[in-house]
Length: 246
Image (tube, rainbow, N blue to C red):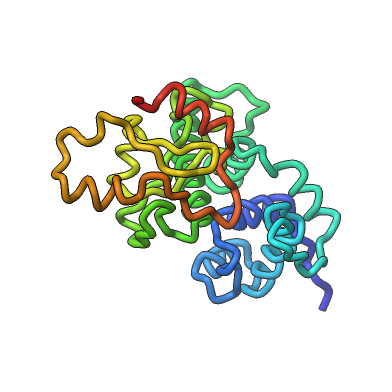
């Protein structure tokens, strides 16, 4: 039977899923792989194989010394080149495919434009969270907590400050809710070696035992590094200089 070529839209959706999954979960039994396969009328194994193809193009994967299967097509490489690092463009492309169907070449009513903007932001936030948590294998990089309901994808440079890096997974850290709140308010930060720094203001208002267990005992310790999307040093430097309370 002749194989059906992958369309551009299918490749975009597969690439988006690729960035949302840890390396070890790109297999045909993964519910997210199964869900995408059903929605594009492909087999689970075909989608899983496509994810593996993308992995062979990923410099983060290559950095770990894994070459991949090397079965990538010209279309795979083209989509990868177009969207890798262009997170906002990938987000907008997937919105056009999945939700809106809006032709952006045609004039649209302002209300439609507003709805598209809301959808774009919501899906963008979802992509950012999924890709950051996947990079850290669903584990807080400070404490090791793995309970998903207690984890946050923390922006290093705040969402409102730098639109260019809003969806960039390298602008994210996987933190539990306590450390996320402390990081967001500049009560903790990380140095150039990714080691935890504490603000002098942090001690006030926290019971001593909790302060020691959750913060002081971890001061100076490096984070658990992600499989990919290691935080950008320039973004951490911004946080230290403009968000962190010395």
